[in-house]
Length: 488
Image 1 (cartoon, rainbow, N blue to C red):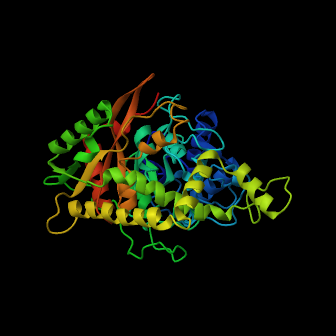
Image 2: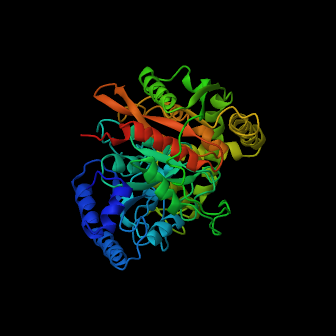
Image 3: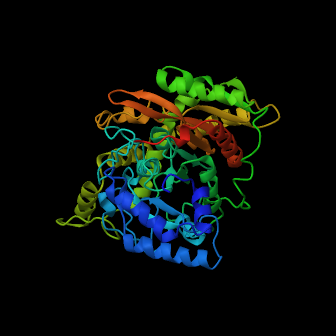
């Protein structure tokens, strides 16, 4: 039962072949037996109470497609009654008095919360090694990282500890862990999913999305997650849509843009081979490959690592030891309390980004760094529009690798933050432009020490083109079985 897709699980629940309570118990038992460190907070009583409520809705014929479906939430979404730590000591015992909008929406749909998932501290990282509560292990190889910051979400779905999970993507934190763990994840257009109740890292970049087994599952989850929220100033006011509406359309005539910048130096041969194999499969499905250029790709790393830390330094200033969060036990005065509380509460990567962000926003450097980065960000977005939009558009979607390598070993890049940052080279530009992008499993590469590790194919579309992306991914998954492979 734990191997079924959301659509299959929903059919089982609707036909009363299994109850929501039985299904939740099955996954809770799997979580309890796991040693991946994917979950930070599990409360069996809370979960089973939700499952019983879902069973009542099923019995009363009041169920929707997600009623009774177990789901786990990245520990960046605040949740009533569950701890929300954002992977940080700063929020070690924090319990929110309200639910994030995303959590509210899933509760309204009748899903059953399995628990809160481990993540890089305040979603800052590409490996899930920055969590105060220890790293998550990749279920394909427990000596490897799962990717970050949504490593707990990707690992939980890959190990079948949860059939689906929420995640967030600031610079690739849905797509990269989905790729490295061999599951499907989608970052929708910026503003499509409410950020209310999502602990902020970089406000102009953060976007929620789902991780699941298949593209169809992700479409069902997006149906519940998206929608205008007046409590979020970045939320887009658009009519709701069914993201599964186009899943069965032919790919005949689809033009796939292949950026030359995604296949240059730094891309591992095993990753390129898997991605090229996937592109060849799309040609068999009727698509045409078009060579394109995204010339500002190489600038995405310096631009991102100016803008994101700048916004982080502003957002994290609220954690001062006064209102909520960790407070140092011993201090002399207010300024000393601020210093000691933050020094004790924040991890090294968070401190590093706060320092960078404060520097680029400081007097004399704002124009030279932050303002310049925002100008280049606009040029990066224009590169995508030249390829994807207008009467002279070159392609319908863009494809390439998600990460330049397969998952690396735990600790390999711990002493080299820049090496971690470079792992985001193929995902950052999409986030900076606010475009939708997703990762689907497309093969395996050779791990340095312990055999095969998953490779993901990135699919990027124009604004609000999620339904097309999901159809493209779904057609590929109907023709291949990479998404069905699971760790031993």
